[in-house]
Amino acid sequence: MDEDLVTLEASLYVAGRPLTIEDLAGIIGKAESTVTKLLESLMYEYDKRKGALEVVLLPRGRYVLQLKPELTPRVGKLIPGGLLAFSTLQTLVFIALKQPILQSELIAQRGTHCYDHVHELVEKKFIEASPQGRSKLLTTTPLFSDYFGLDTDKIRLKAQLKHQMRRILDAQQAAEGKPSPKAA
Image (cartoon, rainbow, N blue to C red; front, side, top):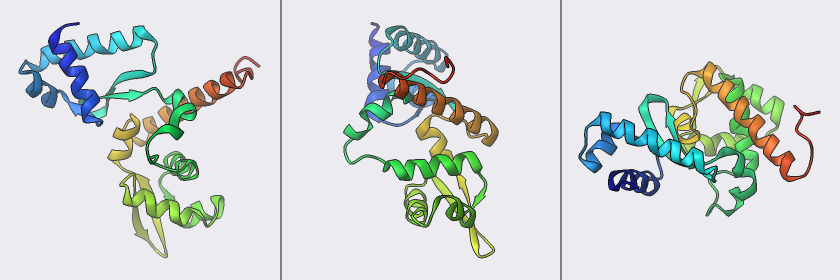
């Protein structure tokens, strides 16, 4: 593999967060057009390998090296400290799919335990909670989109999230030896 390509791969790995073309061009000292071609090559290499990791182009032209979403249910418990408890992640997905949603509506549908989830999600900057009457209006943030590799446009984000959820459920069912709902 080319030295610049290896350096890009190492940069994405070490950063542990999305990087822009500008960031990466500065690291390897090449033109942005060259970096774009190298990243396309790196994405192709990861896709061809069919491994556990993928290089993804995020909205706003940022790239990230990440675990494929369908593997999270199997290995997520190994992540040190775990980013979010499963129940908090479920609340986050619910908010993302229903946004904008009032906290009072969320609590009515998912239970009072969600107060703690909302507090944690606001603290980690995955959601915003804006006062609205006696409740709060909950929406996801750009950090949520970047972290999970989703679009910042709310309509496209919801479609992507539904697609990823289907992939994860299919992978879980395959791991359990159950047929996919599509095949049934």
